[in-house]
Length: 354
Image (cartoon, rainbow, N blue to C red; front, side, top):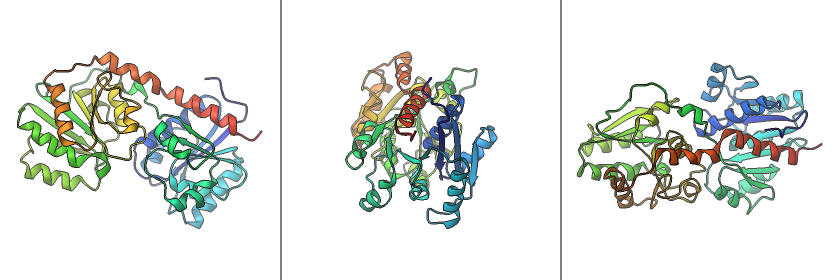
């Protein structure tokens, strides 16, 4: 990856509190830029998991910001001071709040990576995001949406670090005598929890040796636990809460389910399942279809269609369709972290001010 120009300097900003796919991507990009001799600094929320994990892993170039809100004068002043000390050529915003913190800086080229497919508020398009010079979408779907409003729009798919899923000696977390279905993600309406649980309930009428493992937290967690109890599924469903390291869950599973109904950008769950060589069952959102070729490296079902989800899972459980693990893993070549970093470096160099 020999694309870096001399003295290229990037200031990354992410104000998020939670450790999610986007935060993992920011940290990976920052680390790879440093490896390629680029000056890279990552400013993140001092109270967030991204900052804590970066410090724990002793990643260089990390600054903690005591982030209050996008309207905080102290936060704006702190960001401007960090920028002025190094006079970075590029500021790269990785969440919407960080855009507000830098929109009035005139000199640096401003990037923003959008990781969700939700529409942008009409007023935000003109009052906020118009200050951004280069817009990046993590899928073609998002890039095409951004291109309707902004001139410099690109697609750079998020990556998967395959080394996280190399086969290691370990004891399976789950009972190998049953079919283990894994859900990893936020317990929010857009993630499809509200069709997953009733779909799984219907499966238990046909199969007694299946189990649903659910990793994550969110506003629907209490609802999900209540529904499982009402449906008398307690012995078939296990909740694990939020986990930062999820590799063992994937490697222990038979099927990974991604039933999202909206909002996905470039699903990290799908890519993690592929890297682990597991069959992924995903809704046929446009962004998911950019990754999954139905019947080749995974299976797609009709979005928000409970019966379609049930029928698709039955095809796998009944061995009516078999997908080779090596075929599944091949897809991850398209989403290597080196390829992602190279794409960003190329765009940085294209828009830097010489």
